[in-house]
Image 1 (cartoon, rainbow, N blue to C red):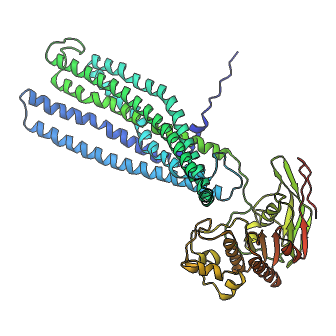
Image 2 (cartoon, rainbow, N blue to C red):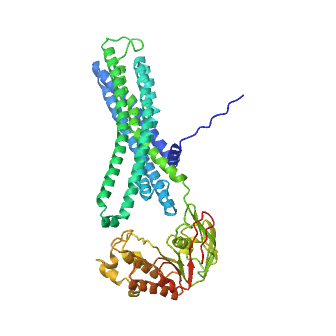
Image 3 (cartoon, helix red, strand yellow):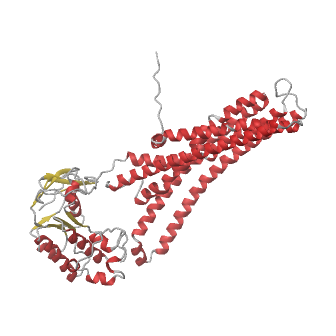
Length: 567
């Protein structure tokens, strides 16, 4: 009866790290072998150095000493060249891996909906920024150190036994203690690095949230509490970082102790053997001056690869922590936008919109919309209480969100990945929370083209521009720094007017505006409709609703399943 073989499972973070390095594995292996070969070149160098000093001790010299010096310098130049080439290969491989992974994160998150399993935008920014850089030390230091550990100590151990079984025995006893202790420390290092990475992500989320609400925080006088919260978060991160450093220093200290004891024992044995005080530990007639000096030169380099690996051990722990986060992010199947976001030609055909059996799920709540048909040039208001789903319907019509059920038909075609980009090329979008590019106001409205007097008048921008120190050349932040809520909404209107879209989707276009400005915004939107554009607005403004041709009343039920919206 045969026993079934147990399947060997690999930790997710290790598998993810292996996958990350797969594209550059050949370059990393080649560079690691080059560093190992460079380290092995010390063996003939040590032999030449031992020969030179042995001849000087015995009173010999001449051409042989000069030859040994020249050979030593030649091997040194070769080692320098190999290390230079290997470091270049490793650095380029690390940069390629980090850059490709960063691009993958940005490309996926730019087209995804919902939240990341890692947290908010701050955690994602920390992952794509400083956390990915933690892979570089692992690639440039740990990977080659691991290759050297697997080659150099065994070669030196063989040469040590060739000259002295006593020195070989010292190496055999002292050597395995180092990786054993490193393995024990590794578990604690991995956990500490994971906690540190999580703390960095949490601090990033906290910073993003507070920066977004900075103006409100100042108005409410909550700055002292905010500063105290940041101090606490910074102290927590410092404690996590110090715990990682303590583990790294502990492993290095123990390693240095074992290495120092091993080298000291070899030095003591060689010294007393050459003085004739010890007659054991070597073969035949004892150790020769050349053999003794050769062993002394090899002893530090027997432990050097282990010391390098120990120094880079926390680099591996940090890389595994990053790989674990990447694996969690990769495993999360985020809902994505329709289309790719590429610039394409507008979708052909009349801008006719039809919805059928449309519904979306919000946790345990289902918002079901009525079937609707919106002909080209129609003026439609979406009305209902706050939270009813008006903004969500606008997003569904724009292809910015996928319905749980049902279809949206635009210009005679179903809205899908194939048609979404071309459909959005015909849309004008006025969000309730305006967002801007980090460019000039002129660029945000007309992509750098001068603003016409007609556009400024229609969007009621004259007073806004007059109040800005540089007019339409002022540089805005992503949230429209320097603009009030009403001013930002007027800029969004100007952007829609400048693009002359076939369909305008406006979310609360008159909110936060005085009656005079709201009337001007309403007239500008209606002027777009008069030119043939379809106007769909989500609003609570009764005066704006009264100017519309069609009103869709959205009043979803709160039942977990089958809630309906009504016209």
